[in-house]
Length: 105
Image (cartoon, rainbow, N blue to C red; front, side):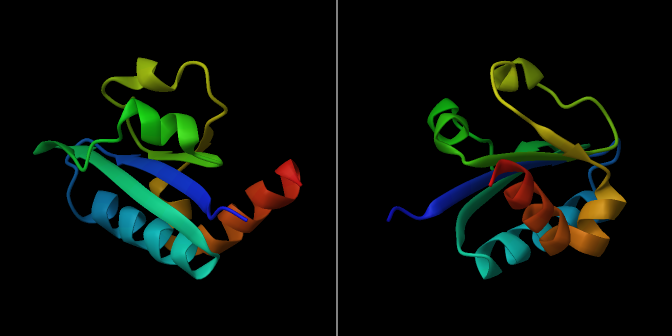
């Protein structure tokens, strides 16, 4: 069976602490749950680790942990996006991923 794939986009106005804390929490939780994972961050320093169209298309789960409207958001127009707050991702990334899995199950 192919490994499940999860991509996430984390963004806030400054793109500093909370963005990277949320990104790390989602990455750690996804790996623990058996996913290949890539997380894009957006903030004051621009877009880091940008998701490619192929990575977005191949993803089983797409999460946006955001406090602002992400840049280049049209890339996600034809996909189901699970939008959560940055604090939710920081506090409960594993629980959120498991909840999404149960909805898709």
